[in-house]
Length: 246
Length: 246
Image (tube, rainbow over all chains, first blue to last red; front, side, top):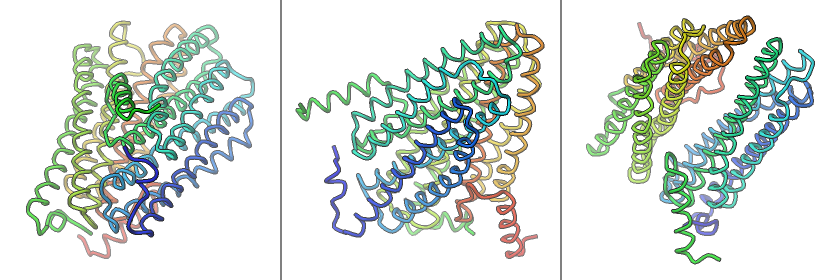
């Protein structure tokens, strides 16, 4: 298993610095995107169209960050021809950045819904669910990034597992909102806006899960996508045991 | 600009063969995924739950293909340390495969909706839209893959541009379906299923666009994401002119 020490140990100081630089840029972009999620949810719940507009404005910035980080990854691949864990680090960064950018896109979509709902006035049903699920997926994004920062496969695994909870709560919320619409057909267009926001949140959870899976790949060198959660957790437990960790 | 001839010209025959092999595996997976989209839409429209089940069964297969192709890309990166257009080819393949897998996921979601709707009986509104948009996005997937097979940046650009049409038609369909729900609240749950299917189709269009953008990156060496379409088309036209193409 790799850790922060051996992943950053290189003959070339310069290569070292490049890897650290691109990784810290990923984390900085992650912080910005996490804030976007938070702001988008607050803008929706508090009917704050100004905050919603800020979220939309930041989207351009995250797009540029994505492109820059991606280009840097390609440059490193071409110039340094990294192997083993360095190669995995670059691959994980270049894939995570796609997920981060899409989280930003979903936050922007939520902000658009917030602006629509501000114009319509009158708070619709479903805000409790948006707040609750919103807070949970924001935390998933945060923890996926923490796991990346600390090369922490255990934390990453817990993020992967948590995605199931989000999916369940999302489905429950959808059923409730469908019932509201049937009871009060005049609310349909407003409730649909809330449903789109919830759907974006559920997507954000998926992207956080993708990033967490990349952290596990990065640390353990195994691809965990499409692997049963139980098998993944068992493998992790066996690994922990094998290393005699306390 | 690269073309099929110089991209496959290598000192090492073996490396050549590896690149061709991984590219043809991507295209084979693409063909399978394109069929999944087609089958999912037909299953929904024709209330064919058996066909829907087939689409769901194939999903496992595309997941495995994705992992295998991705692992092969990493192996090539580690062993061959490709540069320039070879590096771009490997990067484009390893990213396209993610989009293909997600197209498969969306097709599977449509198949699930088809099964739900079969159980409910009675064809809901919105089928015309599903058929129409479904046929268009299937074609986008096909053309994005053709563009990849032929390193055809012009065709790729037309796929990117076509995504705007899909988004517009999708929004129109949603407005109509919201109206149906208001007129007949008993239809809400069924119409919602159709809305989810349309949303999946719109996503499939986005993924086809992503693949097309990767083809442009592969052929021209420039990252076209987040670039205005007009600017992209102008750059392409200038390039074509510069080369005096007929």
